[in-house]
Length: 154
Image (cartoon, rainbow, N blue to C red; front, side, top):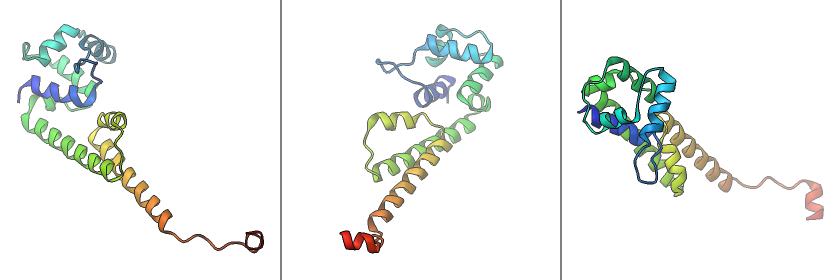
């Protein structure tokens, strides 16, 4: 896997895309630079994303890893990247299934949840499943008996 492909995956799942379907490299680079203290430009980020720069410094990789909350080895070891991408895909499918089963079709809600980490997606999926179960139980549960006062007035 190329560095560009790994970065592309992170950009798609962890950043907001503009109306054109692309991230704001300038804004994203500013966020990374502010968080890490490293010099990071939008042009440099674009070059990394498009494979025009392929040998970033360890400082830049560390800054990217910290920003995207992945280990540096995500960028340096293909097996680590593949495993993380597979875990992300599995968690996304699990969340999608839970949302579909619950009848959630709001695109904006699904989009906001898509930015969660794999663990966050799993927790959201579990919460959706638990809410469905609670609702199903409340609809199936018999109503409590009326009190004597309610019975007389009812």
